[in-house]
Length: 263
Image 1 (cartoon, rainbow, N blue to C red):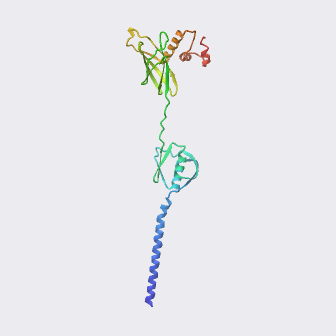
Image 2 (cartoon, rainbow, N blue to C red; image 1 turned 180 degrees about the vertical axis):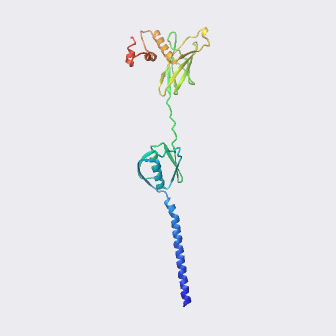
């Protein structure tokens, strides 16, 4: 009888021991899983920040999402303050709203969010135009098929002596030549973005002693000279005033300058 009681005690002790071991193992597994469960990213996020530094918002996003945010301190200024209000949005949506008004962008690689400076967009400058006429210095008649070369581009004057070239912003020198005329270089051509530079030029008929000689003049002087030649050779009685002449007058506006023109 005593042996049977001892056997039952041993069986009960063994069962208790096995139960205790299983409970301990279950507790161990549960405790081990807690950190992993805490790191599971949230499916939706909330934000309500007003004039808050990026550093504080980044920390909150990390805490809510379980993601880590990486950035270069020399490239990203986390002291910049932004305002973000969002409810039940995705991680990408919240990051987009947070960085919308900043010069930064984000990318996600696994559980890592990388913040970088946005690439600078290439600004396409609108070209300017150089347009004008080439006329004969003696009789004021148009010089047809005169070659006009500016900034690596070349064109020829039409039947009216007119020409046009499209050029990027900059300062250029024009080379003008035509059969029977002396070649000429025109300096000081200032092309501005999306603006017209008017260049009227005169050419002198070539004589024996001028062969091979290239005359150089400024764009400003050429404009004035071409105006005088047109006035001199005009069949009617006309007058005109150039921008150079206007700049030398004390007139306050173009209306006062036009009063100086007779006819």
